[in-house]
Length: 185
Image 1 (cartoon, rainbow, N blue to C red):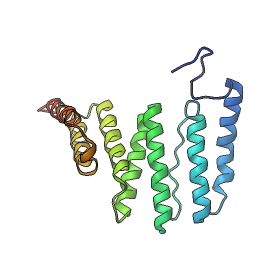
Image 2: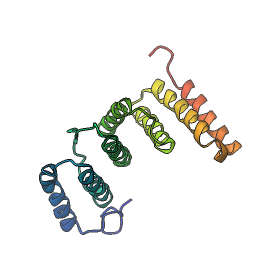
Image 3: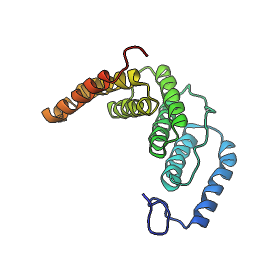
Image 4: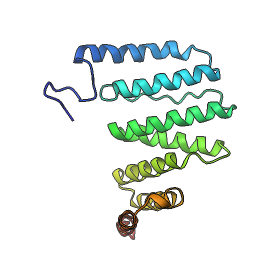
């Protein structure tokens, strides 16, 4: 994970310039919040957010971005959902579990607002990350439940791509997760 000079491998800057770059990104959050939230601007903000996640993943603290734009437009809602999925991926990679759980809550709230289910590939990521979060939090019942939801989602969406060995590994994981649930918890 660390290179010879002690910097994370993904960080492409020196410690001083990375710190300065990330400080500018945090400082410019104020200016980004002044931009009116039209659909075109939301697409630009999504690209800026994804680029910031990629550039500063190892050195940015996870910020709480719970202020929501107007989610009446379906395109706006989908962009916001995509941003939350990206935030969930980064949060589980960096391991601030509270922020990952907040991202899960936001995604669940957004999915309740959306009339259709998100793409199957996003649902697979969602269930896998929830399973990981509940394992870390020692909530074995929900960990087993989301393993089962992951299996169900994989079976519906990617049934042709799953080999017999993959199915066997997943079902074994589900059985082991279920057996790990304490009976009197």
